[in-house]
Image (tube, rainbow, N blue to C red; front, side):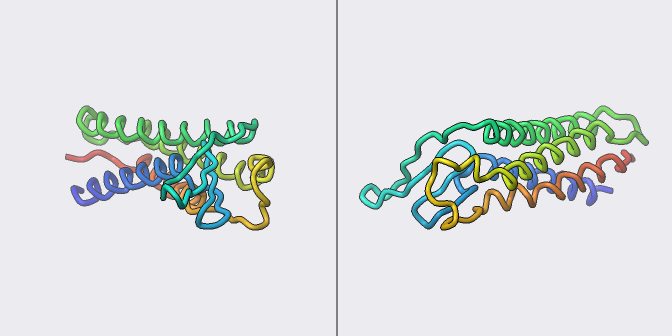
Length: 165
């Protein structure tokens, strides 16, 4: 039981870290090694200063929806972890982690919706940026999609997990 508890806890922390990176890092759309776009900024690498110059993205309704859903996903996954810790120490023997699982599944659904919106509407989101045909989805976009099944599966595991002594 202890090894399962450690595995579930580490899995949750890894998912939360990856989800946070996917939300905050600057590589949702990449044109080349010197220009990228994320949910918050459009960035270019400046060779003179050897640093990134970032300007705020033009906010469309689709971009705002993706931003809100990704932030909600991180928040619900964080709440899920805190609820898990609370239930772990206060729940009676034999109790199920329903609330933790429901919060985690809800985080997964938010992440799924945000990733799907970005997939279907990236042309509208990046409309004022460079030519889209020369770019591709970045690793943060991939991380967001990787988190979807991980969040949903861990939520289901939490729902079936029973506290034992």
